[in-house]
Image (cartoon, rainbow over all chains, first blue to last red; front, side, top):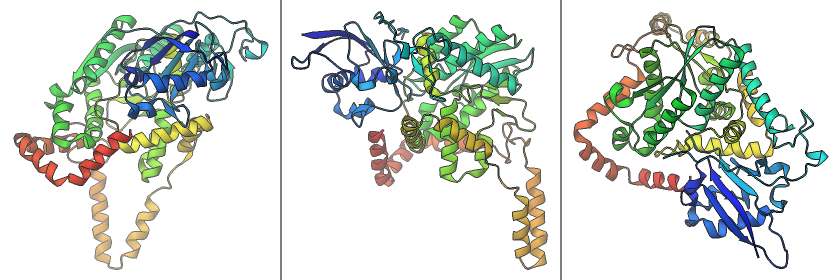
Length: 103
Length: 379
């Protein structure tokens, strides 16, 4: 079983992800839990999508998304959706936008 | 490079009562404002964001009708939102100003050429005139050439000094006397923090001014985004699908500024209001008048001769106050020769022997070079 969602890396964060902004992901759903949370998604991204392990720090810090990166769940700030505890639904759009990159 | 807008979410969930916007009480709240932790919906966010900037502009009397204003446009998020908002508010509230986009081409391949392409797209999207001034035509140097000589470590120092002048000169060329920049609350708090950490009290006082004007300088600078959080600017650009450029400059930021920025972001995560609080502190810190201090030092020097000499030098100093001009380029400068000319002179001396000096630097700066590499790895 897998969950199909859209994940976006914006505001310059795409550099860490092979310069690809929009990703269609099939995140495996663990059988014992039967659901995928934002925390699971972040772990999944860190473990499978960052080729250069040195740049993991560009995305996460202390087990959560690095301060300065905006996380939106269907365009809503994840602070209002329970952050890591949010249970993902099929078709969700998750975006990570860096505010740290200059311009 | 073209622009890919963010994807629109399609999942619509029924809205719970506790999720409603705290302003209109009718739509789902999508953000929590860092300033006051208010939960608001997208439309109320647009309204609040735009109105706050309008209020800042009106309460500080930033513009007068008929004024021509240049927006310092880099193609980045802040200046893109600034250009959009300036045009919007000018039309909505009838400021009666003419807006021109002004860009500086530092000559950094793989960074500025891409971001200038964004500015050119913005020019068409917003239908505003655009003027580009380049370091090459102004100083006969590109940043790439300068970095080759001075090293990555010093790049920000040179670039900063040269860009300030470049914007002024660009505005001058167009006969514009007012440049607005996209500096936001985060930038300002970061600068206050850095000035405190460096003990740079003289700059501390000036750093929070929304409008900077020097005597004798025909061009004033202002920051309409002074009170706007970086987070809200990015969200605004995201929801409005504004086309902005976001790649870090090839020459990594100053290590000190980078650390200060990271520190601020960590503070913000714990206490979101801290950014506006730091600005408030900066605004209210005022230096004691300096004169009293000078007199005591003069009194301490026992000999009368010293006293006379001191007075003489003080008199001399007064000649070089604000409004003085650089002897070489005529640009406003508190010294005989402005900082840009001093930096450029140093560069010119190095130009013919680029290879020699590079080899020399390598052998001499062994330790420093390692440090540099480590710093880069860390960020």
